[in-house]
Length: 275
Image 1 (cartoon, one colour):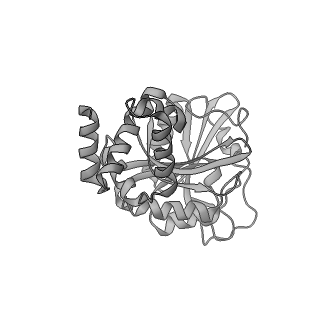
Image 2 (image 1 turned 135 degrees about the vertical axis):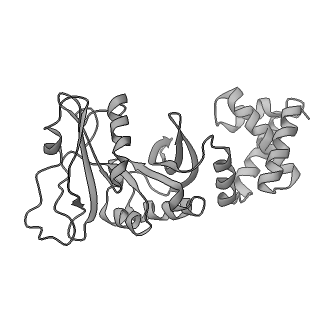
Image 3 (image 1 turned 90 degrees about the vertical axis):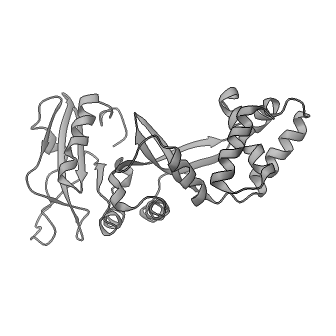
């Protein structure tokens, strides 16, 4: 067995507690993935153990993924230990979807951000294509919180898909600080408990007062989500002449994250992406 396969096997043994045969297979698979730059099992089988017939290795991989219960909480804790940073973390919630033939592969994921990379630690594979809902977001959040305590989070960062009022209330109840981008036509209102009357103009109107690369934090909290609104601080910025970035945040001092986004112009304009 190659030295680095032995080292990987030892690390996996300490962290995951699998039997030796499964750990050796995983170690060889981890070695093969960067070599082949694919997740196609038939191609990975070619380089995993050259002295063994490829078809045999391929069938073994199929059995491994079809019949073995991974224990995702233990695996998530192992992945968290590999993240090259310490608390407080910036967590990133996102969804990715692609198609394998006619089958939608739709994954919700929470990762820890460090150095421009989000390291995945908890995920959920949806049984449908298309967007996700507050129940699915909350279920994944609770799975993530089995690995990371709320007080270990600097912020949970998410895009416009994750602004449903039920999910925002779930974050509030679990005392999770968050920074979530808002759709340009989202309306915001007065703080909870105040007479609402008519809700305000679309949130993009607040960003129009800013100059390019400038951000403004509005002095009073705003209600976000309707009748049972979640109280948020709203920060608006202008990336370019007609390109805006507006975020709701649960903790006022997190505006530094907003300024960082503006400085790097890492978010495309609403004119370039679906609202």
